[in-house]
Image 1 (cartoon, rainbow, N blue to C red):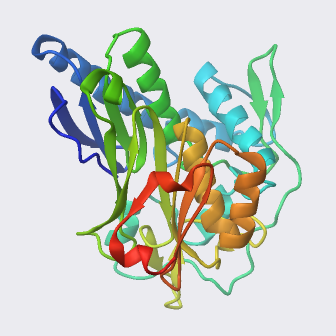
Image 2 (image 1 turned 90 degrees about the horizontal axis):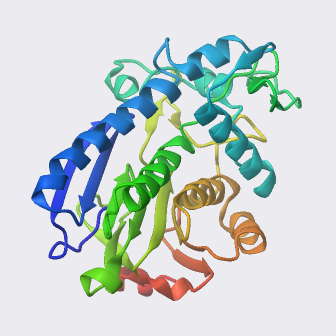
Length: 330
C-alpha cells in the first residue's frame, strides 16, 4: 500500500527489511533527512534481529526454544507478546500468536523468500495438524519474564511490523518533531500531519486483489492508519500440490478456507488495523465483520470476497473511494 500524494513530501526512501518492502515519506529538511533515514533503517533492522523466527539467535527464537520454562524477556518482547494476547481476546481467539508449530507443519518453516525459491512443495493439507494446547503464555511482571506452554511456539509476524511502524511514528513525531509523514511496512501504513500541515490529506492506494498493476481505489486521511491482509500474496504449494497460504485458522490449524480474499482496515491505530484485517480474512466476511463492528467501533473494513465482490463496513465506510469496477459489484 503506497501513498499517491507526492507534492508535500520533502524526503522519500524505501528499503527491504523483515522480509518485506518498507517505504517512508517525511516532511523533513535536507539536513535532517539523511539522519532520519539512517535511524529508520536501523530501527527496522533491530526489530528484525529481535523478533524474526527465521534468525536462530533472535530473542524470539530463544524464547521459542525455552517453551515450558520462564524466559527473561526484553521490555519490547513483553510489550508485543502482551499486545498480541490482548488482541487474541478481542477477536474471540481468531488472532492467535501461538501458531508457529502449525505454520511449520504447513510448510512455512523458513522465510517466504526461501519458500518461494523451493523447487518442490512442502507441507500437507490432509495431514493431521499439530496437537493444540489450551494453555496460554504466562507473564511475570516482577521478573519481567514470560513462560510459553510446553511444546508451543510463537509467531509474531502478524503484529510486529505494524508495532514497529507505530513505535517509529511516535519517535518521529515526539523526539524528532517531524510534523508530517508516512511509514508503510509491507502494507501496514500509518500517516500523520496531512491537510493541517501540507494543505491536503494523504491519498492511500488500496491494493487490487487480482491485478497488482492496478489500484482498487483509495483512502483519504489526515492522520490515521490502514493495513491490508490477503490470502493471495504469501502462497505456496504443499507436497501433494494443494495451495497453501500463511493465514492459518486457529480452529483448524490449517490455512483459512473463508470467503475473504483480501481485507483492508482503516482507523486510528496501525496495529489494530493489521490485526482486524487478518481476523476478517480468517473468520470470513460475515463473522469477521460482525466481530469488527462489535469490538472495534472506530474502524472500517473493505472486504474483497472470493466471488470478487467488495463489501465496505464499520465506522464511516465511505472513506473507501472505490474504482468503478468495484462500485458495480457491491
